[in-house]
Length: 260
Image (cartoon, rainbow, N blue to C red):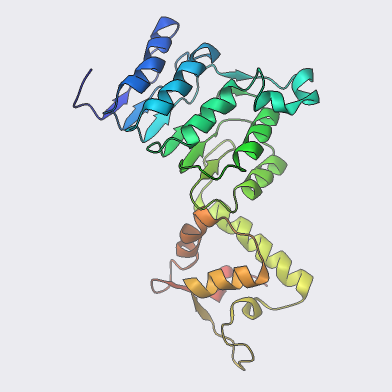
């Protein structure tokens, strides 16, 4: 009922049972809060339907933190035989909550890590989510779940073409350095497979006798596109700033890419 409070942190407050249900409903009733931290309480699957409904009604919340609660999603024999149960079937509660968060017009950050969600279920749900074209969420934080290197690579590839959504997984938040190293590795592989030098990808003047040692952000992007090297659109600006941190604004030294 407060018309002035914009940020509310009730993490680690041992909220459970009727308290969690009341708060789940209140998310939809309040249209003043900008951020709400409900992490490390006892929200369970019994509150998911109410949270999902609330997210369809709330038009002010920018960040919702449900990290470290008691949401459960198991990868059992039935799910193994029919993965669609997690998307449209009886076990689709968590996926529907994620979709509601991902398509809410105001919500930009949704944290759901450190819950009891089997990572095989996560992969099924994220693969379905990546096929949606009306996502407005900018950050989905699933850190704290035990994700393998293979699964991390798969998640990276799922959202390569999404210009907004960044999905964080693993024991800690992935940094711009992680995404930069991942892209540099792809560039390195491309150079090796095609037996070409790094400058051949980004040199804007074909046939030039002296390859340039400094390129612009636009030349970097165009080089990647021309070589058809996949890059995470949502992170590319941060990657270029990281690579060009020792150069003039908007420029990258090929030496900083540090290949071969």
